[in-house]
Length: 273
Image 1 (cartoon, rainbow, N blue to C red):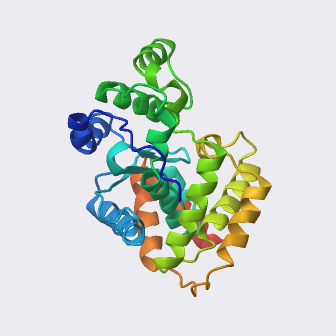
Image 2: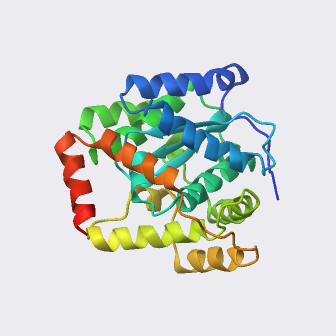
Image 3: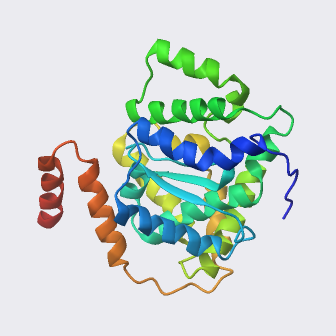
């Protein structure tokens, strides 16, 4: 794989503190899921994949954000974040693992630094403000004009990376390496393609515009087909229903409910079905 430039997104001192600063920033915004059971489950999933990657000696930090929008992103210093909405939309642990593997691959392949190598390194406040723009947009669906203006002004240096966009080449590379990680870590290698299919069904059922994930990770028919073809190159691991994932997903659904009655109504409907 082409690792490209080793250029840094943040100055070295700020890069060392970024994971902790990111966590504190998300706590301050009220969007970090701090439930230890949910946090440990996805940290374990993340490192299970990392151990089969070229970044196994690197520190990673996995977070679940209390944001209903379907999205995930990789940030500097090995930070990987999943929106709760993405986890709730997934049909299995293999699908979520496919997304996590994809984001890990963005980190190990230096995609963020390669995308910024033509620009100056950005500062920590700018990076956090830019991620804040992503979070606020994902929570509310729109932005107050003054808030948006302030955040965009702060994030000018990352205007093209505000939603962690990557080139088609980088997306293809992250797909390819991510599927390899899935197979090596014992997940079903078709998990990534299955999640693409889940997203397509979600879009049709909602009758709305595409979720944020599809804006930052463009989905094409050829991309889905390539993911399935690549997965067939690996021995398909027998898929067993991960009851722990079912429990984690249900726990997260309760935490995301505005009121307990909403969660109760959802589970009663599932029982009726």
